[in-house]
Length: 462
Image (cartoon, rainbow, N blue to C red):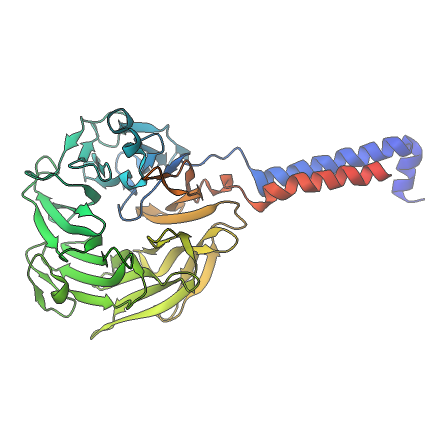
């Protein structure tokens, strides 16, 4: 007599079936808890989002503490932040730095208002943000104490004098000599210019605005990367017809004193389109630069999205010593398509140029790690950070000065884009990272109730 027959005889048929059902449900619940759901993990933030030009949104700083600070715009119109402490392995409470809604209403709920950070060597945190398309609403705050997000100075308006124009995409970079360059755009998407101004006293005061790029009646979308005293800039133009076109580049090798093309040709400011160094000519197709970094020899590398659906793809560009070249990485799809050409996004690991993170369309947009072993010529997927997601994962950002346990953050959810004329369709979007990604709903969650139903049905027939 086998062991199961002995159990049946001892307990009786019904009691035996109840025992088997109980054991099955117990094992099934363990499977759900540890394999699929893991609902005890929460996102970094809910109903919140990053932008992709305002970099960095997350910075690790090692001083008295070892913490990664992460900032975002909440759908409520609040500029918020929290940190992850790498020693105690815990996230802090969320701190609200500024509540824009009482003053700006629905304008405050635009994803363009997402902030960017700069942490000084003292540990004091500077945060920069705007209210999209509201004239002269360009702001900064600083933490009242180093490495502390609980208290902040009053909101400081830093728009340029004698202007009445929208500001966007603040990016602050501190050079090796301590000079802070604050880059930003003035104007609207189809007619705007890139500017910068300088602070020599850690952001207490700012010099006069200087126009960096002027493409006439076209708009500019610029990304900045600084290393030592070199400043690298990549940008697109926006014509109002094809949403974004071409990729351009310039560099200052001497902390903003002079500017030039990669081949050394000097450039006068503001740079005009007919003088700009063109990295990639997109022709009649749209493209969108997403990130720029430089290696230890200050060679620049740029990633960008190219072509509309169904031919959407990501590409990688670099200078080969005499000209700009680029390679195909992989295909994807447009995340939200109302003519603006918004991709899922792609970024480069500044500590490993041939290691990138991108948002690729499967059933949903998944965050993936791709690597090149032949200096950017060909690419292969090396890791899936998310899989079988029931929501989209997009707009990745590399944590500045990252740790191995927390190197990339991204937006995750259902992005609905423009709502009531504002880019406020992120109520169903959360902020995620490697540490919190198990809170992303996956197909496991959808299948679990179905598996449970089948289990009950099987025993009902017995």
